[in-house]
Length: 138
Image 1 (cartoon, rainbow, N blue to C red):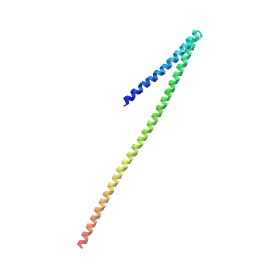
Image 2: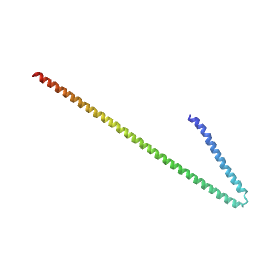
Image 3: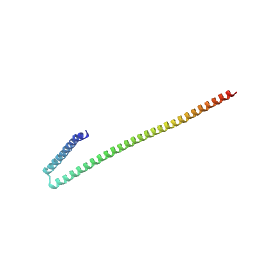
Image 4: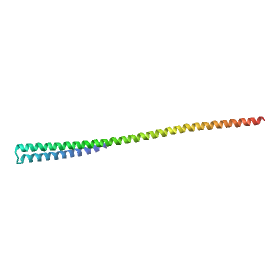
């Protein structure tokens, strides 16, 4: 199923990339034609082209910096959430571990209590038997 979805998504991504690249190429071609046909001297045109290319490069670098900043922010958020979930899982683990220890201790206490009750019952039976034997001899 995943392969099918990947095969559907990839062409859309490539199509989007092709459209974006075509758009950018069109802008650059339009700018080049506009500058080349403008009524300026060659030096003025070259200077203006250089300035515009530098401006475009600065805008590109600013956009890349913004994307990097957003990625860093999202990665930080993801790390924070992962740490929160890890802490919650650790707390649950500790809780279950303590509950298991408590249950184990309760089982031990019950066993000691039951043994004490059994010992008391045996001692009582023994005492009753001795008392009966003592009464029979008289």
